[in-house]
Length: 152
Image 1: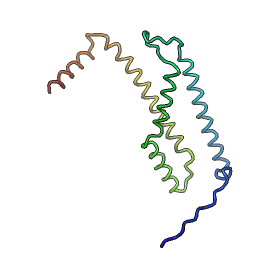
Image 2: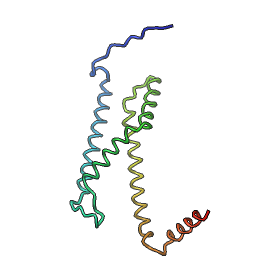
Image 3: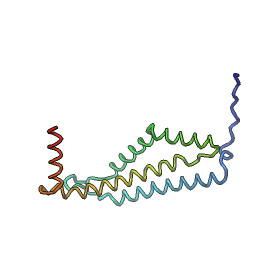
Image 4: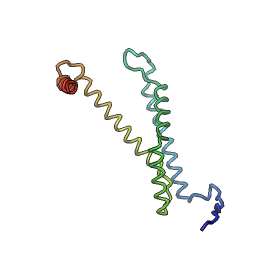
């Protein structure tokens, strides 16, 4: 039952993908470049150049670089890699070419993260005015819940 497994000869890179797959891959790389340029332009527009901590506008390229590098590190989390790997293996087992699995996973994941960040921002702005008001219903109910939890 032991068989010697021989490696198949590797094709040159140009012959590994069809013309349509090369086009799709080019479009994906172009879209990724577009997203990076759009992000850099938005960051450039968002920076005020006035870095004073007192007025709450401390936001600059250092913060953006930190967020970008932490996002890159997050991309290589084991759960992300395994989700892409499992989907790729499933598609390969079905005889399909999984060229864009990682691209669409990252596009969907980053869209969800961006949407939740925007939602959180609006939520913080909505709650901020209630936090300043000592007689707000937020203060009343959170005080009641806090006392109840502490007492049990």
